[in-house]
Length: 217
Image (cartoon, rainbow, N blue to C red; front, side, top):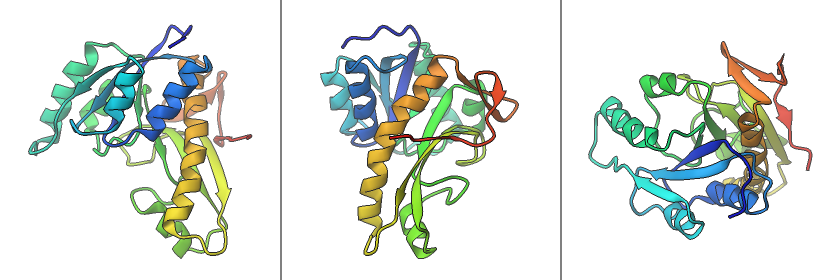
């Protein structure tokens, strides 16, 4: 993999890792502003682990099955994570809510992508909820992670038109294409120091970012 960036990132996954693949592809095209240092999963059978291994990225599995103490799990996760000392932590389909202690420890360094135009529809079933509301536009948001679920400062959004006859599945597929496009871009802006999070606000080039950046493709 050809990478010239000096900052590093750890990617957290639980499943197939399609957003991870988008990051890998961007790195291979030398348009990613950071190196993919490690991929973490809470599931040993996550398909994204194979994607990482094929790309030559180190992997680490911290199993969560049967672990009821979220704080204790996150402490173990942090110990493993700190071995890699990443500059960024990128959540890419990591199906666990991180504890307040973990979020505080890595404040301003954790990113997530959520399948809605936040602040609309935090949580789950976003596509079905957008359809039920009769929305004409739907999309996804890259944001900093805070203790508030899907409530951290927004960095970038991308949208699609809701089409007549759309189902939650067809809408999700089109939104996922946008996710793959904007996540590498947004994460690169953070790694390059152009975007930052301070005092609960998002900054671009030192100025408060009042509204999230928009996908221009």
